[in-house]
Length: 240
Image 1 (cartoon, rainbow, N blue to C red):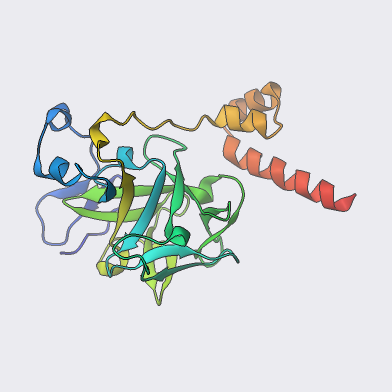
Image 2 (cartoon, rainbow, N blue to C red; image 1 turned 180 degrees about the vertical axis):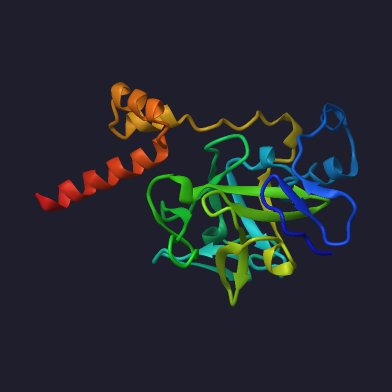
């Protein structure tokens, strides 16, 4: 089954009558108490996510061929089969940060964030702060999941073990993945994950309240200002 050519808010399957679109879970679905999916989550372990709300704490991303995204100490990202299969290895586990309600940022065990290279659109893990290039949106539909780059508005696709945010639509297995999270065995009692407050992060990075107000008035990105501030701080440090 193929996804069609629209992006982000509206995706379609080729040949399907129904549009592939993101939608909020209905209240009735939230009230379901012992469905088959919930039965699968009754035991501790790694579980497949079916909504962005389940992505909190530690997660992993498994591609359609069973390989996980893994980070290396040089900042490169590759797909490889876990030695702890079906569970991920430590290098294939990421900490989730939620910059907003629909998107996530992923931090590696080396303290770097997964981002998209501006030139080749290749995924790598070299940045120390969250900006637009570090935003990704998990897109769920009918049991299928894809990973959309917030900055490029392209889907992440696998090519020879590497990942690129270069697919305008989801056409096949190269773009299909699944997010798995570490379950405690009592998923429906876990509190809703917190959304990162950009203003609080900005103040910790050294931006004043006046700076933040000015950015908001200009419609500028607070996250980009945080990255610039931290980059300047590093440059000043090494210039001394």
